[in-house]
Amino acid sequence: MAASEDTAAITVLLVDDEASLREPLVDYLVGQGFVVLEAESAAAARSLLREKRADIALVDIMMPGEDGLSLTRHLIEAQHLPTILLTAMGEATDRIVGLEIGADDYVTKPFEPRELVARIRSVLRRAGRSAINPDGEDLHYLFEGWRLDPLKQRLTDPEDTVVPISTAEFRMLRAFLDRPRAVLDRDSLLDMVQGREAHLFDRAVDNQVSRLRRKIEEDSRNPQFIQTVRGGGYRFAADVTRVPA
Image (cartoon, rainbow, N blue to C red; front, side, top):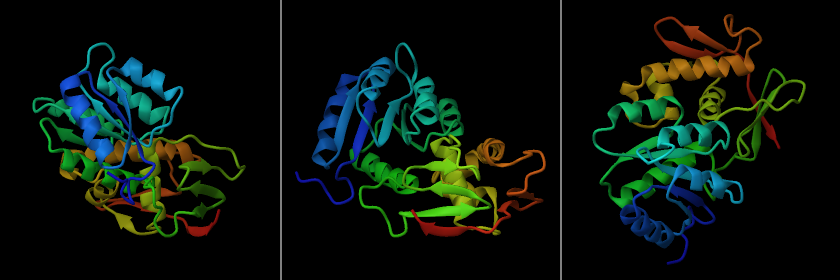
């Protein structure tokens, strides 16, 4: 089957120790036009990523050796890789932990492959990594000397020093930059950043805002950019412009 317009050149890292799930899923994803890197363990996934690049990861939580949550944290913090968790019905606590450390979404086994593909596409759109970039993706965000490149997820400070940010921090910052000076409540932010089950993860917003403040604020205890609005949520209190790359 030919690659569809929105999956062309998208590489998926699939990490699951169950060959009975992994192998038919690889066939399905390839049939949908994705390139698939296949790993049966966290160690195999780490080894693959030393040689190859992926656009998104699908990670089983329960695996022998290093578990999926530990690998997910590495993928988010070190690889800046959007990640979807593959979970069993009884892993609600692990799902919450996974989303709080920055995983983009989850699907519960057994799942319909078509649903998984829809979630992959949705996560890639939110992360700005679809094969066909939407209008304006080549424009950078500028605020008070800071610059955010949405295609590379690259943040630089007023001295042009790169400030490392995770995929989740990037999505949070971009949500604010798209709506400067607007009050965004937690549900709205979660819908924009996580895109699913927002009401379960209120504290994930506060944790993410705290981490982002430590990256961009001179004094995170007295923030000038991301301000708390009592009873309302948060507001990005600076002017934002979009400029060519």
